[in-house]
Image (cartoon, rainbow, N blue to C red):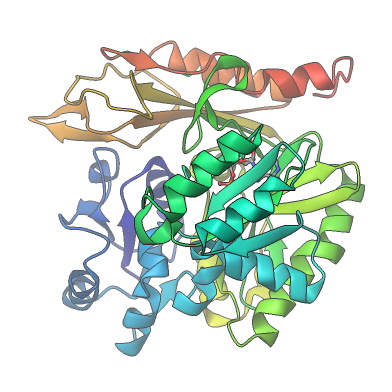
Length: 424
Ligand code: AMP
Ligand code: GLY
């Protein structure tokens, strides 16, 4: 079966390389793809938001399956448009993608179904928001309702910071329509855990847990980014906590979506915080995380394409979804300045061995050059977390380009927290 993958990140390269291992996989197309996917698939130029082009490409190439991983086309209803043409796709339809594209939808869903999350209020009026903030406890968290490239969350330490954030979103249009409604929520504390899970709307099969590192600089300092590195599994996520999350969060979420008439089929991303009161949902995403996927794919032992097809077909309960019990680490190399402005077109020197997923890089006259903020992700597995981290950094050591920046401490905080646990 020929397969079309939408997107151009390290996530799509990691998924592409895994899908390619499946005996079911024929030719692979990417729209638009990147300098990594071009090595084993055919890149088709264009925007993932051009739904007509996506549908036309799928038809013209006669692909049997389209994998939709980025949030924007999911929220725009690409999977619905493909379904109307009888083309099978991986990913939630537009109604189910609201679990990520509208934070107020997600929060109200959790409230209605008793799923643990931070307490909150939703506002569209600046005056009402300010009135609420005047009596609130600090710190407090202000979130733009819609998709804002991971930048729509402000943790405000004081009334004046909170007022500024609410004003910029509700009155000054900082995130456009995405910020015309805001969620103001209680500040939670505790270690963060990401769990990605396949679900076909009734069955759910979680993947290995992971820990993202969202801040740009070492020591969790600097601006928030899409993610600078990941370790998996997440050592905070014990079997007891996993069982609790399954009972109190994962299954109730799947049921809630089905009961509300928008069953979720695809990869559901649970962003969790392990608070002193138990695990709570910080956010849902309607897709694979990036760079979580780059850390998880090297651990996957069963057939990814088969799992994705079963997810789309509603037969996930019978599908084989298996991961190795090794540890994994991926470290992202970014262009200097990211997540702010950065230069492009730098030639990249690649290491002689090791897994490197390509993100913001393209081929120019046969040379791999930077074309984005997050340029690539080095990924490695090991018997222990320490081994995986060392191996990922040894790959990074073999990569260079002008202005290359990366965090030197991916996984360090987790290792320190579990100091003395030799099995890590
Ligand atoms: P989000 O885009 O919702 O994942 O938020 C980005 C980051 O902000 C999260 O990974 C958390 O570190 C932090 N965050 C979001 N909501 C809260 C909250 N209610 N309490 C504390 N931190 C939060
Ligand atoms: N790494 C966080 C995300 O994909 O949203």
